[in-house]
Length: 310
Image (cartoon, rainbow, N blue to C red):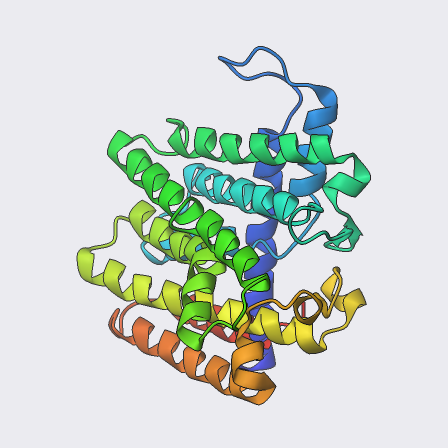
């Protein structure tokens, strides 16, 4: 187990990266139109800012920033790419919270966008956050090399779209009305798409920005896939037994809606055992980077994901 001093250092790094991401999001979501834009409607900007600037751990940006940092790459472009990913993640939360989806009134301890504004504005805010994410990722300010920008943009599209997050959400909705519960393998595939794909992308994008070699990228891809599953299992456990005030959102809704979760198929104790196994798998993947690699932050991240309380 990490010492309290090590964990405090990890939390400081997490907070610093979150602050850098927040500052970038604040810049990207300004009211002034960018070159090529005609006008930014004030109410739509306000709804987007409500969605994106309302706190959160910023785990996905953190993973991208820290993976790139492992290879000595720290610059404004990396933070831009990380903020682009967070814009896309926030769009998914706005749409997930809509009455037609998960129908949630609370997100990060605040009213969801459709409650703070209205449903039509929430839909448009999600659409605009999604589009802006690709705008940011493809912009020359993110990286001077057009091939790297194209690689990031394509991978983000694949992670977020039909065969990734959006497809996973479709499977999740279908499972609620299914005649028979999903198998463990079916739930693992669903969650690898819905939740894991963006976490995996965050790690892979950091490796791309860090210009890691093929072997390092393969090891980091294994790590990213494993912690994506770990994140979802921890989320399922928190929903089953977590405190609503600590979570900042409604607890117990998975069981209410007959959601296909790891807890529903493994039980709470089985889910905890699987979570522990995944942390070990994540550490093993990082071992493949070699003894000289500075993997301490990513190792601590795997433990943080498993032990989080919100």
